[in-house]
Length: 258
Ligand code: SAH
Image (cartoon, rainbow, N blue to C red; front, top):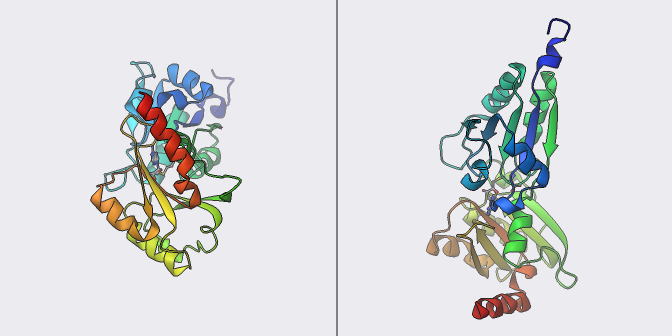
């Protein structure tokens, strides 16, 4: 060991996307890494069935990241990853969806690199992609949308965010973390000139057994969320693709066969 530089003795950090929930939607690389992991640092969105794929002897560290639950501040998570790696442990940092889509993976990667810790990112299926597939809702469509945007609806800075032009005819807008601010979001988009009748879908627990897909007009977003008691995690998808009758009909036909 004495001839090794300290950096060589460091472990490595893998920032791994766990996808939207369904374990079958993990990449092969994520599954392979998970099955040999020794230290797993995960947030609250990661499905328990996925955590169960790691060896029972692995050390699990939960840094819960669900809204309104206690979670570890981001700089402490960064410091934890660095500390574990510098102690010589390989760390599997498991994040819901994709690490680089509203996952703060960028900050974690930067902290590790700044401390001389090697980082590798394994992409995951982001909630929007998973929700689109599971709800039979194409995010783009030759007839309805040639642009798709992902935005964060978190309170911080919402009023300062310029979403003008992101939603409307020919476009699909996917809002992550938008439940708590649903009313502000609908007001903001309508103030930006969007028709109150613009169709939307709310997809709760996408790809999980308890998934719900709720549809309605933009002006009814708040009442839909309240009436249906929509819970996190959920996405709000706005645009004509959410109202494609042929897809809804196909879904109904399939359900009728079952
Ligand atoms: N990195 C993640 C997003 C993290 S932000 C990704 O790429 O998907 C957390 C938000 O993602 C939640 O508030 C919710 O809006 C969305 N989300 C994550 N998983 C979801 C799921 N299974 N169904 C619906 N929305 C989900």
